[in-house]
Image (cartoon, rainbow, N blue to C red; front, side, top):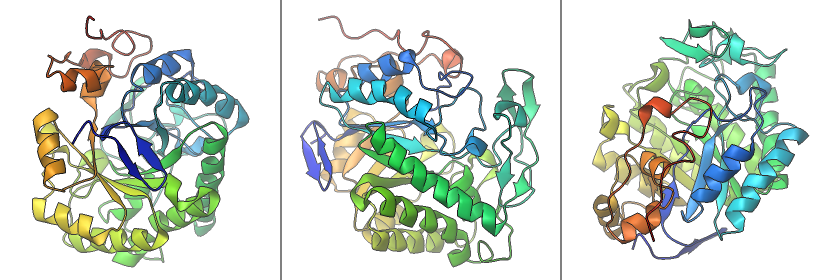
Length: 358
């Protein structure tokens, strides 16, 4: 099943393998995509669906060094080379919108941008900056309702720019502790206004962004990534996590989103997402369901046979194996990812992983 073609709504895919979004910090220091990124995605265009690295819809969302944006015409023109390279090989590519929110340092932001979040709680730990090295995360400014209305508009505007740039759709990053999940998670979101304090309040921003982007480019072009039980960037499980995410899934069904992309990082040491909850979440959502987290050929095939998902995403295996589809079809050995080069500039550990010898 993994290598079968797949069609549903706007998707017409060569196989059921998804290249998961992976931050690789290879854009320019001005947050513009470049030729190296075009090569990287073009090398992996045999994936049924590529979801790009996190790409900010706002200057305020550029929390990390050298991550790309998609909010101005220069970035639109730069992204066109990548989408063309993937489409030339019959691939499909969605851009992931990642607003970092409080997961940021001011040294990584362009002039005039600021670190924002649900409140003023600082993300624990440190982050890398090109100019100052490792630094504690910056203190965010608590977003006003005017700020929230503005960020919703930014997502919708960037969704239209994504289509201009040639993308087939947009994935909203509602996982891993970035802005959308900062509002979903009560450990971070301690607001008592209409954007916090309850399941409906915490879900509100995610749903407003979903509505706005669907209105901008259509429901068949919008998906969302979620990570209930995730612990990344100061998040974590909370007492009503399952009730909240089931309510969110049902509401996203009403909006008409194309898919939910579920993150389970237990293979990397995070708490597992319970199997019965994954099934309940799938049943609560009437769109497509993408599974992610530590899959190999055998476990992906089994998940599809058992109808636990429609598509299966692979992250690090696609990074280290540009021809992952062919390798899995042949049960060939896989290259190991070079973790030392994950977030550094240049081609090493990015576009120089070898393909199978013909």
